[in-house]
Length: 229
Ligand SMILES: [Zn+2]
Image 1 (cartoon, rainbow, N blue to C red):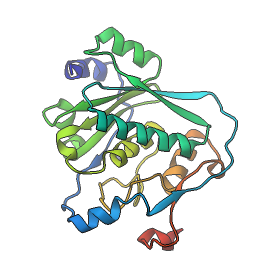
Image 2 (image 1 turned 30 degrees about the vertical axis):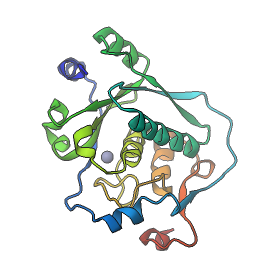
Image 3 (image 1 turned 90 degrees about the vertical axis):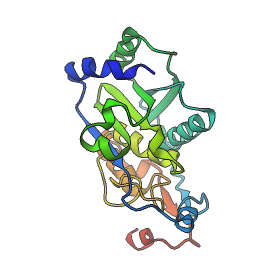
């Protein structure tokens, strides 16, 4: 897509209020670790009563360059956040127009929307700062922005988890030592929205943590997190 040429314009307009990323792990994971970390059976979400909606919506515009399975993973990340947010704030998603013009991008920006863009490691966002070692980079602030997914660096990593981490930044969360919002990708963690991630977003969005949902290890699953909870 042609987003690359728009970056200097957007940077000049003062878009960059937040630039953060999830970094590549320094060590490759072996298959056993990946299998253990990527299981859907290792955790379950809480089921707290949903609250009345505030009507706050975060609109996502998903690049058409993502394939079907990638789109499904992005939607899964969005749905898990919507479940965690429990009605207080809600993500919506639609496809970005094909080859968007600057005026279409500007319109999305004016409305506070976020563009989920698929780029590769030749993109300017990957050439500086954290972007040089990142799987994905979020650039923006309260007025919307970009989530760049660096497609050729994802490989067999958990795209849902990577995007869910970035959506945490979209919601105002910073980094945390372990779990979803850890700054470095870990194949054994970060596959669901844990309590620490929910707490970071609750703080940023001025929500009550007790009214959100988060994932917890199931009773038959022992992880390093169990002793911290
Ligand atoms: Zn990050």
